[in-house]
Image (cartoon, rainbow over all chains, first blue to last red; front, side):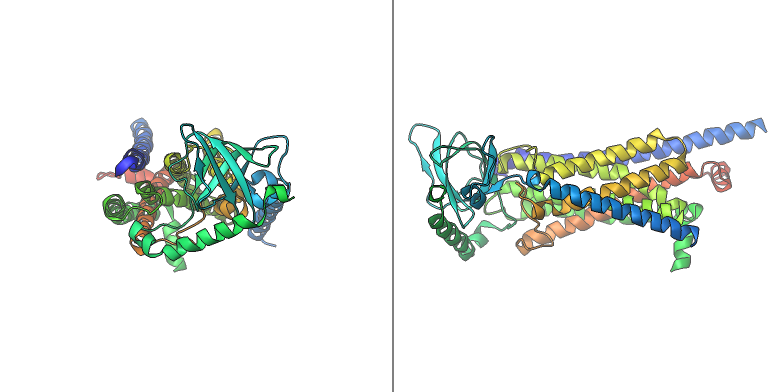
Length: 48
Length: 159
Length: 248
């Protein structure tokens, strides 16, 4: 890769980091939303 | 008119209004949106006299001179119609080549030499392998011819 | 066609279909990206002027393209939501914003890393291409901030859709900045006058396709979460979550 190796690899590495970060955040938010609804519905059901 | 069509009209009119406003604003800022001034405009005297600005063009083939033992570099920049000599002291970017694009930041000296304090290389939208570039040397020749031809025509001291 | 479209726009149906569809986009997307990255890093010849630094193009151009593509999806689905009041389209707009912001950030960073060795600068204030792409990032941030600042989802949808529509002007500027004004940034290559050898261009096109597929999968996933949140008080969500086999 010659003199530019550090520049090239950091670009490809950063791309991987951003894609993984976006996917991880999306998964986290889905779990949280699902969990919140579940907790609320279970609480409602118990009260009935 | 149905409510949906009314909403469509409202969104459409708003979009049109924004587009016109943006167009007018851009027109007003036209000059400030330019990252650099063309060499011909500089030779014609159309550049900011009181502050530093950038010129952009191609480095004239064979014009580069380095002073032995110092960082001083002299070269010429052309837009293939006019040419300006540039003086610079410092490190050049890797992509700085004769025949390639360059942007120089600085001001016009009394002697009609552009005193640059920063040099940036600008590359074009052509990408090819070194071997291909060699066999395509006509492409390179065309650039060089245009560059050298431009270099002969007009200079700041003519005006 | 229309029937299918209407069915897809129904939240419970979309929720089910999107989970099935997402991997069919994500897996080919990742395979194409991996192949093109390997080509771009090791197989493609280096550029006659830029040497190996040119290899950055394979991540920079796709991310810059997605940064604009995501914005256009966000703005048009916001407009569709305003006019036709389709609930799903506002969910699409809300889901596109964080992905778009991510790829805009990536385009700015990879561009900057490319610029340092090639142009001789990380960043130049006043360059139209760089400034408009930076404004695009702030538009995404503003859009997301506006959404989270308004608690009422219907109001948030309307206000943010208007903001997104206004911001389209900036996307047009990003695209044409290198043609309308002088810029340090080079002109377009992929679909325009610039030339690029076929063995360099093909991996770039594969990369663009791979990024698009991956983006589609990411978007579907996020719309799904958005639909679930918006429909949290509906019967189908209640039935799905409380069903013995559970949902996901």
